[in-house]
Every structure is written in C-alpha cells, then in structure tokens.
Amino acid sequence: MDNINIIIFGATGDLTKKKLIPALFEIFTNDEPVEIIGFARRELSDDEFKNSFSNTGGNNEKWQEFLSSIHYHKGSFEDLSAFQSLRGQLQTDNLLFYLAVDPGSYETIVKNLQQSNLNPPQSRIIIEKPFGEDKQSAIDLYQTITEVFSEEQIYIIDHYLGKETVQNILAFRFANGLFEHIWNSEAVDSIQITSSETIGTEGRGGYYDKAGAMKDMIQSHILQILAATCMEPPSSFEPRDLHIARKKLFNALRIVRDEDTIRDTVVFGQYEGYKTEEKVDPHSHTETFAALKTYIDTDRWSGVPIYLRTGKKLAVHATEVFITFKKMNHHLFPHQEGNILAFRIQPNEGISLKLFVKNPGKEMEVQDVSMDFCYRDSFTISDNSYIRLLQDAIKNDRSLFTSIDEIVASWEFVAPYLAFKENHPELVIPYPPDQWGPEGSNALVVNEDRTWLSLYPYKCDINLTI
Ligand code: BG6
Image (tube, rainbow, N blue to C red; front, top):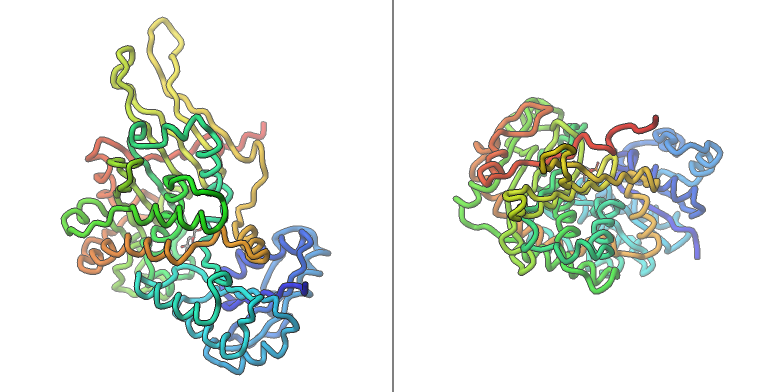
C-alpha cells in the first residue's frame, strides 16, 4: 500500500506544533512512513513551515529525514480551488485528514473535500472536540459528515481515550478480581474526578471564550474518564462494544431539569484576570471552573454521588480519580473511615490505595498509610496520547475514538447546566488564581460530610532518585 498522506487543516496552530508533529515524528521514527501536508491560510514556503517545528524527540538525522516528508499547502478553508489543487498533487487515496481547526470550519472543510473528490473509500477523517455545541448541532454536523464519509471513515477524537492511564482503568477493574466485586454501591461511598490545570487559556482565548470548562473538559474528557471508571464490562475491547458500553453509561447519567436542584449541585467560576486575556470578551461570563454533583442511575451505582471538578489557573496540575469506599462499622473499629483508591491519570502517573494499619505501640489504634504504584518504576509511557491515536487511525482502528451516540448522550447531560449558566451569568463566581476555585465548590462536598480529595503531592510526585 502507498505511504499514508496525512493532511492537517489548521497546520499553523498550537495543536499541530505541540502534539501532532511530535506524535508523527515518533510514529515516523518507529518505521511508519508518513507524508505530511500542512494546509492553512498563511503565506508560507515549505521551508518556513518546517522551520516552525522543533525537534523534541532527539535523533537529529531522523528529524532531518522526517522534515523532508513535510510539505505546505496554502489555502483558505472556503476556497474550493485550494482543495482541487491539493487533489491534483496527491498521488494516493491512502489519506488521513486531521481537522485541527476551529469547530466553526468543520462543515466547510468537509463539503470542500467532497467537492474535490478528496473522500475516496480508503480515506479517513479525524475531527477534534468539541463536536458540535449541543445535541442538535452535533447531530447536524454528523449528518453533514456522513454525507461525505462513511461511519467507518470518521474518527472523532477525545485525546484522553489515548492516555495509557485512562485505558488502564478498564484493565485494572476487569483484570483484578479483588476489585470488580466491590465496584458498586454496596461498597462505594462516592466517586470524585478532578482535572485541575495551573495554566490559563494559553493564547486560545478566542476558542475558549466560546467553550468554557463545561464544553471544553466535562462534556468530553471528564465524562470519558467517568465512563472508564463506571461503565459495565463491554462484551469485548472491539470498537463497537466499547462504544455501546460508554453510551449506556452516558445515557444512565441523571439529567437534572429542575432549577433548584441544578443550583444546589453545580458551581461555576472564572479566574481573576481572565477577562483581560487576548481574544476574550471583556464582559465574558465564560466559566474557567466547573464543579458538579451527579448520579448514575443504574443498579450498580444507585445512590452513589459522583463529583466532577475541573478548572484552569488552579493550585495544582493533576487529573485524578478517587473511589472512596464506605465507612466500616466493625465493632472493633467503629466509625472507621473508608479506604480510598486513587488513580493519578497525569502527571507522574500512578495508583494509590489508602489503608489503615496499626500504629506501633501498646494501643490498638490505626493510622492511614498509602500503597503507591508509580508507572515510572515499571514502565515508560509517553505523555503524548496523540501518538497512539494517530497510529490507530493509520491502522483503521476506531476503538479509542468516540461515537456519535456517546457525544449526543454527553451533550444531553451537560445541556441543563449550560442553560442554567446562560440564565444566571451572575453565578459564575470570580476566583483568585493558584487556589482551588470558588469557595462555594467546597460546600458541594462538605455539606455531605465529604471533602474534595487531592493526592498531590504523593510518592510519584517526588523525585526518588537517591
Ligand atoms: C484540551 C482542552 O482538549 O485538553 C484544553 O481544549 C486542556 O483546554 C487540554 O488544557 C488538557 O489536556 P491534557 O492532555 O494536557 O490534560
């Protein structure tokens, strides 16, 4: 088969520079020949385009070889003739399109691909998130794309699915008999997922101000982590079975319609200084922080509160999942706190289990200790999940991509919160950078006799080279 030609729309953007080119270099280094064509509006020569990337992966000889497989094609997304001239230059139908562009341009690009015969059966298309901006626009967008590409050619990306540590949640649950039978409401008190970032919008104000934390993180990445944590076992790891299992989970998320319940279970925040950032509306009510409490209405999770939290410019950079087990009421240790199992998704990936052991001495008292597993002690994993996802797309494997059904269900879940925020912009509360968001988010958990959990810093955060 011919070498794959990867055409990146939005080739001068941040995603291309920071993630896609480093991932493609890694793939190229592993002997997968690729030809890359960057498509963007700017007037650039091939050399100027190549020089905008820097080698982050070592081996300079390979890097020079890699650069010779990169080309630039100038064109605006509206200009059909730019697509037709691209078609004229391509020598193969083995094509992979990557839409690393503002979601507002998806439809235009897809239609122009069709008009210029750039949708042969061998081709596939990767589309970034957010896919649509609500349920209906996601359905409409999918409809437009399926008029051009078949379902099997469409790869809707959520890069969290490419993270080893997210995939590992499924392996951990289903390969360790110890846990699977206590993975339910009989044993579990509550579940928390926090994805906190220390960075702000990093020059992406134009996109972010239209999205906000709910669309940017919760509707996609955080719900995908939740799916891995809480889904029923899929029949297999085949794409269709995984899509079904995730969709079922999303459909079981409780959809709150009543305003008072929403008000009591969601907190929005915006970090101070956000409004003065480039391309951000100075009167913006976009949330850079969101925390909420929800439930999964299945037998397995009945009554178990699920707390989700994400934000930018927070105190710590960490994505973590906590499964808190119920308090023990053993006559020997009445009111003993519950054990906590935590997955550190990133950075310094690991798993930590909080246990209680006897405090040495003559009293029979216990103290909490943690059993920690740090990935770096056993494995080397990359923090660029686009490597795995691009490799899969090259090999026509859609297991780690999302399906339209999942997306529709996830939009249904977030819609009431988004509508509530639209109606109550005054409830987007300012918060100081480098802390944990608006004070009110604590009430979500404290009122229920719980606290937000954070592993940071734990063993894997500490440099152990002695
Ligand atoms: C992107 C969001 O999808 O994910 C960003 O648009 C966010 O706002 C990023 O910063 C987080 O990804 P990661 O892999 O750095 O946790």
